[in-house]
Image (cartoon, rainbow, N blue to C red; front, side, top):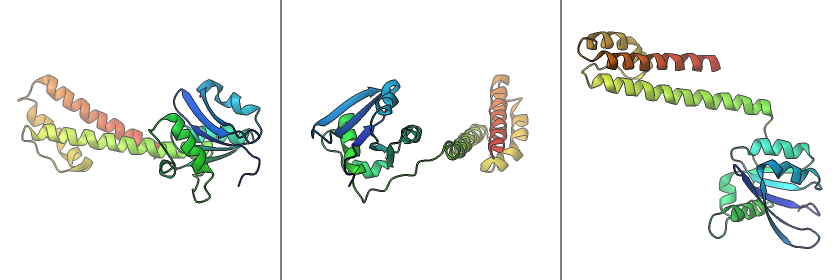
Length: 200
């Protein structure tokens, strides 16, 4: 399929990357570990390779860097690689599974994104995360106020309508520190509203 082009499977990690390939000339099976800081240097002086990596955190960055060096990079979904893992799961077996999967014509690669595309996706993810945090804070605040008999409608709008009145009713029944903490929680929700609006 790839003629004389070396195919390399790479299992990327935080500190040490595992590489697997078969030397085209000798047929030798090569398994190499590279520290993150030496990774690109390893490929800088190599002939163009077909490189397979699992499409996980950091893979898009490394794919862009390797492509800029003239290598062909395919990012593979984790599910596509999983079926090729043999033996106990470890970095060596994962790199070999990626090496096998990248050569299969039926395994579809994930598109490599530009930095601009990745930035837009990052904003969507950050917004989604903020919405989850805000929902958790709102539900937590509603739950705490319900403990003292102050029941509000679900959701941000329901809490927004009733929180000031609920805190006013409870201010003479609860310690000032508790009321202040509940007010701070409500303020955090407001701050998250601003952050979400800013991203939007």
